[in-house]
Length: 199
Image (cartoon, rainbow, N blue to C red; front, side):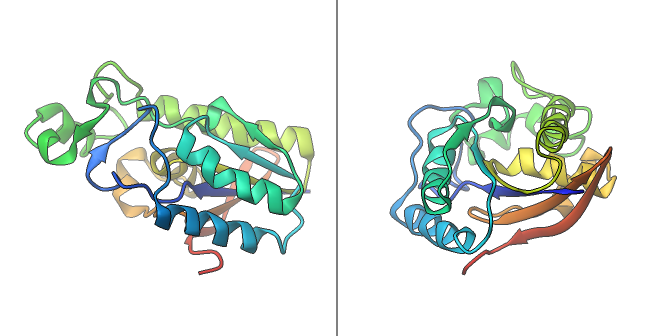
């Protein structure tokens, strides 16, 4: 029996598209983001959710908490859902990063490059895929909502599609979107991608 895992990108915050916040502390949802989280919670409330999980980041927990409350579940904080560690790029404006040749390499050869002082996307993909299989091994069926971050979700979707990490530009993961993977045995199957649930 497959386990259905809804990978939810956290709702929006004021720095989206402007600053590479990475693992910066204190990044909270904006007013729009809180409305998005409420709509996600209402959408999932109509489904049988067996578990709700969240990245440790505040913006992810603020997105997951109303989903958990409406679903009658606890919110489990899971390190495997954590944002990419972008090392010394943390907190930098995207406009400033454009002049950094390492940033250019990161955005051309994502499968081989590594954030300076941070993680490689290979490592990110390994931890999220291992987590998906761990969830399936524990539940052997059911439905899980896992709130994470754009690059982590992209890495999982590329694995499900059997695409190289360098193809990350082909995967869109917007704030408060839902991408769904079915896990069965050793297989990941894509069910839905970048859906605006309840919008």
